[in-house]
Length: 242
Picture (cartoon, rainbow, N blue to C red):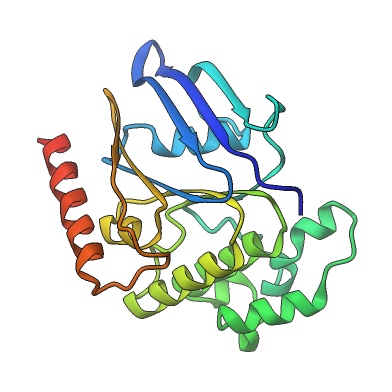
C-alpha cells in the first residue's frame, strides 16, 4: 500500500451563489481517523466528495492537497450514504468490482475473509434485491475494505445497522484500516467518540475541533471518558442547531 498522506481542505463552497459553508481549513492527519459531525445541510458530504474528486453540485473556491510534498490526493476508497451496489451483480461481484475495473486479479483469499467478517458468506451469490438494508450496507463496506487505498472516505457507513452489528463493523473497520487516513462523516456523537483520533463539528460558519478521549480506538462504548465525549459532542451539536 502507498503510505497514507495527510490531507488538507481549504476553501469555501456556494450553491447558486448562496453559501454552503464558510471559508474553512480541515486537516486530516496521516494514518488517523478524523470524524466530521454537523447538522444536515452544512456541507459535510460535500467536503468528502470534494476530496474524492466527485461532482458535488457546489462551486468550490479553494484547494485540496496531500501532505506528501504537495502532491495531488491519491486515489481514494469511498463509501457513500447509499450502498450503490450494482443491482445486477452478486455480493461477490460487487465486492471485487474495483479489481475488475482495474483489470487486476481479485485477491480471492481476502474476499473470503471479508465475507466472513461482514457475515455475508451465506449471501455471497445473492443480488442486492435479495438482501436487507443492513446486509447491503455491509456489502458496500466490504467493497470499500477490499481495496488497499491509503485514503478512505466514509459517509455514514454504519447508519443502517443494528446497535450490535454497528459496533462490530466499527471494530472491523478500525482493524482493517489501521494506518490509513480516514475521514468519517457521521451524525452519531457516540460513533465519533469511539472512533475519532480527531473530532470536528462543522456548521455553516466554520469548524469547531473537539478533544477526543485519550484511549486507543475503538474505544469501549461504556468507558466514562467516551461517554463524556459523546455528551459534550451532543451538547455542541444542539447549540449549533439552536
